[in-house]
Length: 211
Image 1 (cartoon, rainbow, N blue to C red):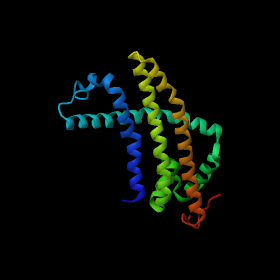
Image 2 (cartoon, one colour):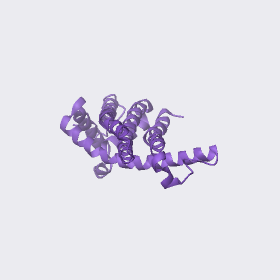
Image 3 (tube, rainbow, N blue to C red):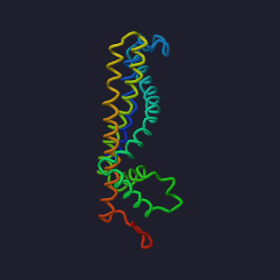
Image 4 (cartoon, one colour):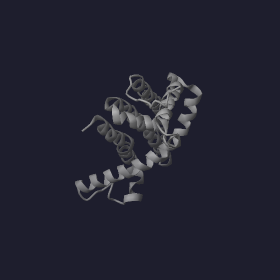
């Protein structure tokens, strides 16, 4: 197994399955009977209980991941305004390299980060591993943020105000950790691309150049 393939699996685990499992454990006592009847709360067999739990975790994990994607525009606004770690400078540098290496009509279809990530997977698994680890962290905290909001709502409706407040209080640190991990992950990907280009690993044709 290559490191890049391993960390793709880790991203799926941290971004989907683990948040889904946490949400299932928290929400099952309140919402389980409405969705699964007694299968989740009173399974007939241990194997059946685990199968139902994992199915619920996988299903909820995907829904949570989808809801979490709507947080990304907030990150984009903050990144453009704050520009920490010289992220914008690294982004522009990686974008110029991408533009010099691909055909002009391909540029609109190639997001700079996704292109950088693909290049690293293809030619530098160690660098890709570095980026994937940070990406897994950011997506985990983004999903946990959604779980905290859902838990706060469920706890409030069930009369457990204190638990609802605790869950809501975790939203802010989860967002800041998501922001920091994602910013560092994208910046690191761009820095790897710039470094590989300067080392001659990414070569342009004689008619192409990077300004």
